[in-house]
Image 1 (cartoon, rainbow over the protein chains, first blue to last red):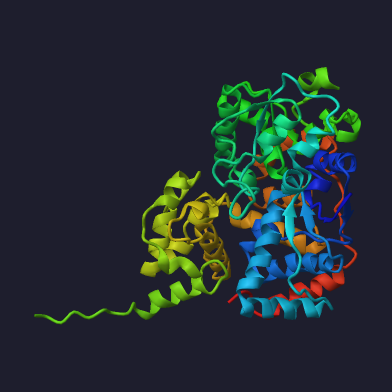
Image 2 (image 1 turned 120 degrees about the vertical axis):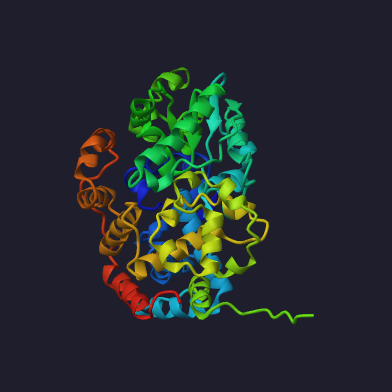
Length: 288
Length: 193
């Protein structure tokens, strides 16, 4: 059994609920104990960083301070939460004057942070701690013949991720471990438009269109991603892309844990497969 | 032979560079060699009033008002492609975040992009409940920008709602008073300078 403190992030509880729902049953099968950080708050995300960096860092550090008491690595399934919490740690380490201010802010809430927490992405834990071999050992329903494209997005691998920032391979190895056919495609770590989909929809959906085009041209029947925002842009906005760009995409976009769960024989309901907007039931039918 | 002298930049130029350098992540701007890898790597550069390489040049030329009132940095999607490719280890994405902070602080942020408003709505939501309430934030954004755009997006929202992905109530942390004290103190300390 491996133990971690778990930081779901705001999306895993809401717009990315299939992610939040599919993690516990998969973790259980893989002998991972994820203990949710009590009373965690929003990491601040990129918007807060772009409004006030000190407030944003203070907000993120409250989580690190809560996690420090637990003494375990802090694991999040959200790529943006990962970057924010990890980079906050970096700023505090490299900039003593900045840390002094954050310390003062935390003290106002009767908290303190010594800087000992290691922030990790769930995908990295799956790849490095559990390993593709460890995952393969738990596969009961190999996804033979299913053509899956790994979509990494940006913030899992940049600016300071665990995999190659340009041409990552960890999720591809996990796909292979599940018995599926790994589809190689050039844009697997290019941007989906992120939160720009709200204020500048046209620009963001132009990027989504490029991704879906590239993935389907390479024969992917479905995609997997670890990132809540990437999943929403590619899944929930797929019909809008179709109407704006006169395309006919119908490609399910699953969270990594959902596909791992299918290959481990976990029932569809426990993996919230009905939560995906583009239904994955048809492509997954042979394995359910 | 005429004597050559190296002039230090005018005070206004220096103060803008110092302002950017004072924000964590902005410090490295002086190392830029204007190679343009950042612009070539940026997925949205064609939308920017001034693309990333030029943004950095403009900071160093002290063109504060032109830059802060442009739409440029608001199109940064934080994909960090520029950051991992920069041969000088500059962090252009962090510089864009620093410019966003300065633009908001100085009241010069552009009306050509709705991103500043979205960021404000997000921060208000995070400050208000300790967690972001996505539905509330989206409604506020559309009311403040373009209510008709909300109608166009209704099918996306409805899809998320029908798939149990759009809770109708915000989630609020228990330690709100502590968080508020922390954030108020951070604000009192005058932001990251």
